[in-house]
Image (cartoon, rainbow, N blue to C red; front, side, top):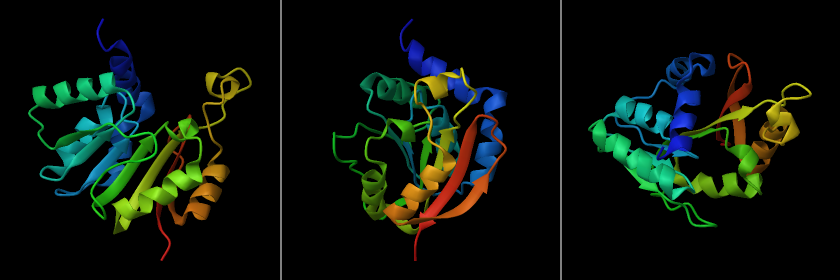
Length: 188
């Protein structure tokens, strides 16, 4: 079963309990916008974004080359030629400067070792009115996977770290049962 993990990630992302349609409605993407899907996994959101932005670009960013190949093939199958595959280097994310309307990160932040520095480094990639969207697991119950294995970051910590990195909380949503959902913009 080739790319089983990528398919599993897409199945979880597309599950109605994960409210993918409501996430997309909330973002209200426009034709021509550029978005980086950091930690794109199987590419479920990358492909949905590509369809929504039309001639805009979607940068599917992941550290797993197998996931990126899966996304490349899926985009080709769907006739989406605005999906750009990006394998980041250990310390750099190479994308066009001042080009992004959105950076989207779903269930990724808990994997980043130095989040403040990481987000500080993203400021140069955003357009002046660009936004960072962070969806991150909540702590969960005493025996939850996320709590036991540390696969979560409390919302308050995310807000604090983003503030330190030069962003302000713009909007906060509470419709996801197991995740926090916040949109940040650059401080003026």
